[in-house]
Image (cartoon, rainbow, N blue to C red; front, side):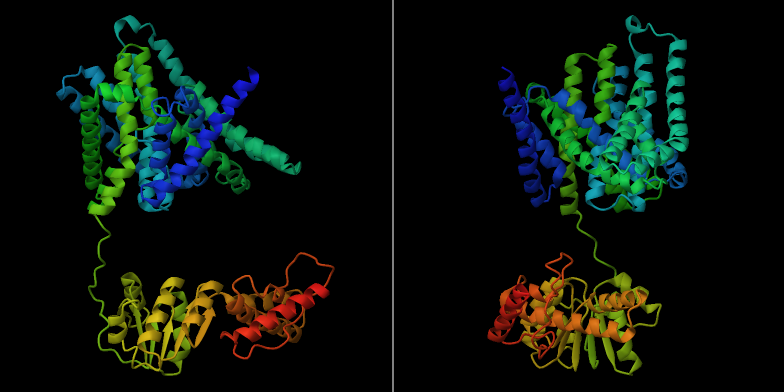
Length: 619
């Protein structure tokens, strides 16, 4: 029996991992995001799908720790001074959005015939946006630290705080038969919550840094990891026992440690647990969707999912516009935050416990929230489809037409700007094109005339004077774009010399094979100068350091020629690794490449590579 139980548990663990591993890459490839992948996988393996799991509530309870750890990591990024600077957004924008949306959603319940108490609880629960979903979306889009992302985080923090007075209101609104808690008990519970927050602040301010310093002196990595988990889970437990939000406790602990010298170590220790448990949380939410309830009440559920998301989105949009947010930002915020969240489950469960709603209403409301969470990634995808990125305004920017400079520079980023200086100082007529309007406008303030044009378009190359130029410099950031431009130049203007910036070794090889006259990896020369300066700082003579750097340069050129003949894995014997091999030095190239940066003939390169590798093995 024990063996069977163990086998069953292992099957469930494998099913959880397999569901996430299979579903998430597929949904991300479809552009629907990882969250919808986890939620859909949870529905499939849950009690109303394949039936691999029959108690999603137990998994959800454990998986909520993923949200807790996520909030802890967010807290580590929020120094107290930074959080204080956000106070107007938290208590201004946050309170406004929660208040307006609560009134609007309560109105939906009243208009559809529900009693005022039930309409308020249902609407107030849906007001509490899913912190896990919104944070994950912001993280995937790289917007956690942007001003817009900070405003969304401010609103989420206020909503996390709002669960406390909402739970108190549930007890206050309970039917008379359940009303056995006096005002003294209620004031005591509020006092316990405030005391827990103050205690956590004091402990974080005076105890945590000395605590981690003592552990760091032990030089036991696993103890530091355990201590990080202890701080996060201990803070969450303290808040939960005092009647507050676990996530709020973890966030507060993160804020208190945000200026600690152990901040980065803590983040590294928590990150693996956070990622796994957060994925498990979304899987458990998907499992919790009661498809029988949805099927039996599908009209009711569908109506309230659409009505609540639409009305809440309108409320968020109106508040954002009143706070002077642009239309696009207000609309994006409305779509991202239009769903219900995990704290709604807590509020509805409390309302069920005191008799405000019955079991069937709780199941329906939970299904409405879960479906809204599932629909959010789809709504975001639809928003991107119907509202593509606006075209850049070309006011004050000249289009590349009928240009005829001696040298044409394509791309004027940090590389192109430096490359242009020797030419301009020599008095050479330089024409520059770029497709970044903001950069063009900024460059004008420094005395540069940049024309708007996309170098990957053949017609733009013609009008920019590529065919009349004595040289074309490809200085764009993206390696694939550089190769594409080089191919166009070779096919259309084979007699014009092309010099190109290469992102890495692979792009350099592609450019050489296309046939550019010269290519340079963007970090190669700067790294050699840096290495030479390091040798000199260590006391190596300048002439000797210069010889070493020249040897590195020759080895690199020989290795590049060998790779052009035999692929990226060829020519490894030209590199000096830091793994000792009998103290044998890597042999110098047998001959200096005849055309650095260009390919030697394949037979010579292959023979050279084999000879060097054999000599290295002999030594």
